[in-house]
Amino acid sequence: MTTPHDRPVPPAADHAFTPPSLGRRFGALIIDWVLCLLVSNFFADPVRDGWAPVLVLVLEYGFFLGLFAQTPGMYITKIRCVAWADGGRIGPLRALLRGLLLALVVPALLMDGHRRGLHDRLTGSVVTAA
Image (tube, rainbow, N blue to C red; front, side, top):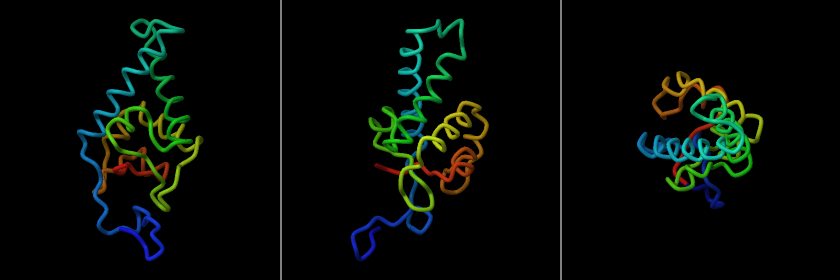
């Protein structure tokens, strides 16, 4: 939905907002996780040091979501993570917090009707189609 000035309506104000499927979100997470395993191989053994790929995932979210609103996995699956209130980027600090909460797993499983997990609600974000 767009306004008369061709500006997208923020997800919070769009009554027709439909979130992407859980399959696309999970696919993006799997792609990002594989990339994190590969990157963590440069400084740790991801099998023995389980913290390494998790650290890379949190940093990946902070960088890519904060600056581009998409991780590489989200880019491939054509989804993005934006601010719920205005549809803009969430910035590096909120993206880092979102990544940290995602790493805890449980917050991501507690979803509302817009498929916003607790990690999304606490950081004021939402996953949308790109």
